[in-house]
Length: 369
Ligand code: NDP
Image (cartoon, rainbow, N blue to C red; front, side):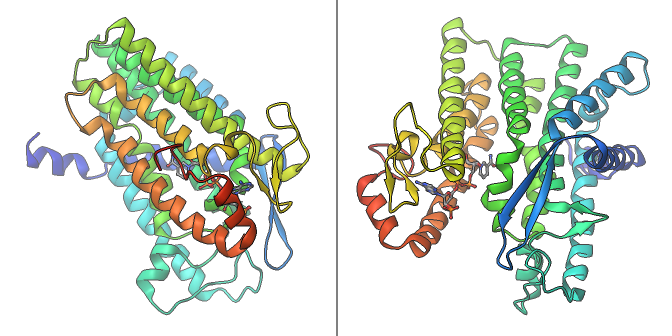
């Protein structure tokens, strides 16, 4: 690809700006009016709790339905994203940057004493801009952190669907493309089916909304997690039946471990006496679960997520490292995250955590790490 073409493709057109704005407007309206389970967030330092309306699945299905009808009647082109991916990428990047400017200014001016909005100012503008100042900033009653992560996950699916439409249009649809599409759609749908679990994750409860999260949600998730799809549009990969079956197993095992571990922890937090794998749970110090996946490794959920990530890339074969960007990035991120979480848990649970580490020595990979 020549540099002139690349630079031209990176300049956002009005079309890409319109696509982005319509998408955000739809999400804002759908998120506010569609019915959904109202889930209380964790209790914040000042004793308050935010509430999240988990209607993401309905919003997503409705959007895909509307786009399907729109493309059937030639109102929208199904390849609108795949035809202008780079423009959309730069439009989203510029939007993230501008949104962060507004968030930074709002954080500097905030006088709020509530835990969700109280500004955390270090005096280092770069640090405050990158890590954010407020825990749960809102715009017109919309919780922006929850909104952005939802936009990122839906954006990833929309990019994938547009890539799929492009490969059908070009006559290049392959078994590899079908497998990548299938695994990622299952993962994204699963995310929205279990959207309420998101309300207790580290990002929502502990991380302030800074450029790191805004960029991560809006740009990084949709545009880098879909690299395999973009790559398969331009590269033909022949898979043997055995390789395809093995690939399905990697996805299935990864998914079962990922979802199973996250579910066990979620259930345990709600009811510490709930059965795990049909037996009463082993609980340390009345606080930490040491049964099921949490008795095999201290972060089995990360292991499951890594296997799923690998299954997204395996359909691309091994001729290039580019489609392996996502699993490699996730590996680095989760090992780093696990280290940070261990420090947090060691401080919070003290002797109970030490006892847990003694009982469950493996961090992520049993017998390896
Ligand atoms: P975890 O779901 O692993 O949560 C860690 C927290 O769980 C700890 O801080 C502690 O919090 C609690 N905890 C830890 N061990 C135990 C135990 N034995 N019993 C009970 N509670 C325990 O972390 P994340 O929020 O980081 O990840 C959630 C999921 O999101 C993971 O599956 C991860 O793979 C995925 N993820 C995916 C990313 C991607 O880019 N694809 C990025 C980041 C995460 P407490 O103080 O509440 O007890």
